[in-house]
Image (cartoon, rainbow, N blue to C red; front, side, top):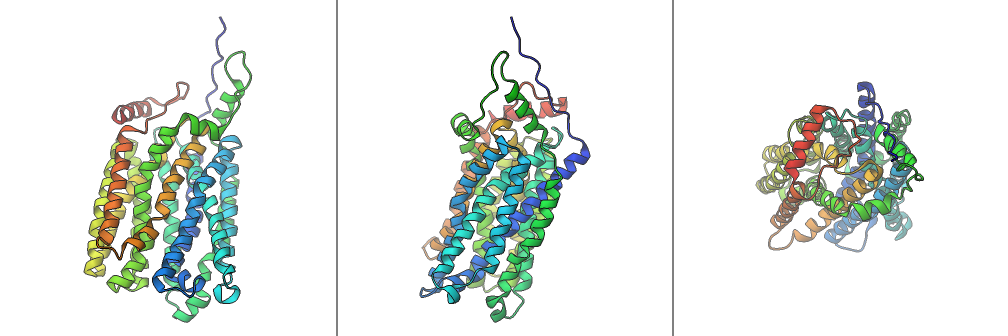
Length: 460
């Protein structure tokens, strides 16, 4: 009786490789989310006046947030597109493409004529460029997660993986700081050309990010997946690889669970970093520059706390920590808006720091390793990205929905209640839907294997 030959297992990555991969993931995510948040901030502060005319200020703001949300319609498509490239041709190829597309679209936004110059064509072009941003971001997060986690030692996946999402917050921080600086300009200068500066600066940081990623090798997990497909069962031809079909047909429940987990966390983040800017200025009388600095401080807390929670998840059940983070973030959101109602900047600052450090950073720091361990390498980029970007699609409409609900009887408390319900659904998914995937041939150190076994039992 013939037996299958032993599957070659890729050698464990060195510490230097793990660090370089984390840097590449951090820098790439920072670039992508710098561009994304620059758009969101401009949408909240200036796009309504520059690109939409002959409507009330409230409707102009709604239309501005609608263009912000339009990019999220493209993100699941981007997740499938770049996921296919990443699972078929390599993680490195995919993440280089995402940076190139995102950087081009963002610089073009900085050069885009406004309504006063080209009329109705201006918002049309704005939406087109926003959709290109959405496609790029749709592939970026999944790719950054994989290059950081798959290059990490298996017993430190939580720690190294956390830098991929810390990069997203780092980009958020950088974009917010840049906008906080340019908003110090006189209003007429900011409205005429100052808002363009953050978008044009993207060209410089994109160049740096491309250089960092070009020197990175493919991940051991991708090489192993290629070897498995090339070998196939004994006496058979190589396995035909269909990443999109396999992901959607074989792992729909896992994709749905990932979507539920991420939707609440992402929605809250866009509510506090995009919607609450305009809410604080119009309802609490807090200057927009002050709010930008408050959001910057909260984002820095996420960057610093991400590795802390990620490292803790290498020792404690990831699913339990994710449940804690989701519930903490959604409950603390009520406190944040209560403090905005008071209008005291110090109280607003403290409440937002709590939302960021004890809520958002928990899930944000853990989910890279959590997602990687829930899917096989052959479809990990496609399925993981699609699940994350379906969540982002929901979250992308959060500022628009919040703005629409603001004049209603429930006001912002209805927004907080919806976020709480979404996070509760995510907590249930982390407990019962998403399971740990552990192929038999993976070479896993005993300590990491014990940790995974414990998490698998907790998830059941």
